[in-house]
Amino acid sequence: MIKKCLFPVAGYGTRFLPATKAMPKEILPILNKPLVQYGVEEAMQAGLTDIGFVTGRGKRAIEDHFDVSYELEHQIHGSGKEKLLTGIRELIESCRFSYTRQITMRGLGHAILSGRTLVGDEPFGVVLADDLCFGEDQGVLEQMVGVFKQFHCSIVAVQEVPMEETHRYGVIEGETLSDKLFRVTDMVEKPAQGCAPSNLAIIGRYILTPDIFDILEATEAGKDGEIQITDALLQQARDGSVIAYKFDGTRFDCGSVEGFVDATNYCYQNHYVPQG
Ligand code: UTP
Image 1 (cartoon, rainbow, N blue to C red):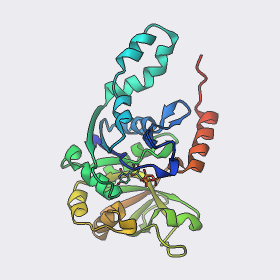
Image 2 (cartoon, helix red, strand yellow):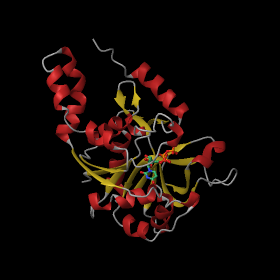
Image 3 (cartoon, protein in one colour):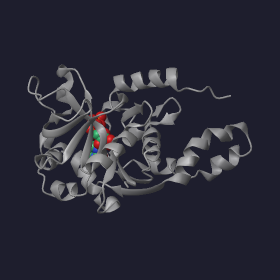
């Protein structure tokens, strides 16, 4: 059983400046809900109720969001507005939240390594909240838990992207096991134009086995001078221990303004319930 899910949220969110100067990117709302809440809901639906945040300076609003707000709740108690807090209350009651800090922003691999203290020695999920995913029958993380139960190794979610966009992602090469499953044989972080081994791009959902931490300890800075999770995963892939899963559903790159706007429009059309 996987119970833990790590949310690396320490990044600066520079693509959203000035909005992210004093506010975490993960608190930016899609309609009336912060990005990070969508991610925690997805984790909870997958049964991952031990939520660990790897935060950094200026991210206090995330901790406050997953806590009670006595003054506000007292103020709206008994009014029609109380129901607006139902969803977040359910998360607070159903999940346990822990926090640790990444002191220097040395990349996603380093952020995950910083979360070791929250995870310990068991397999765990990783959600990058700025990738907003909507599954069809099941959420993306729940689908991946099903794949993990079959293979008992690290799982990465992948999506087919146009070849000319592969330079923005970690890209895998793999042996095809079925139309949705690949045993990863190689992976390249942000390949130069024309050098991608496929058009299967890794998105912000992972299930990792805990040996990844020792591998990350020994991983040198790679692309962009950052410790890359892709480089550590490649070590596991050399033993055949990484499966790529082409998920069912829709994903929006909310780390970019264009993706954020697309997600907002999609949610407005598909999920928005006007409030009384
Ligand atoms: P991104 O590179 O997409 O996020 O990292 P960013 O750095 O916040 O955004 P830009 O590029 O400056 O606009 C992917 C995820 O990894 C986390 C980020 O918070 C984001 O969720 N991350 C990245 C860390 O937690 N620590 C890091 O050192 C780097």
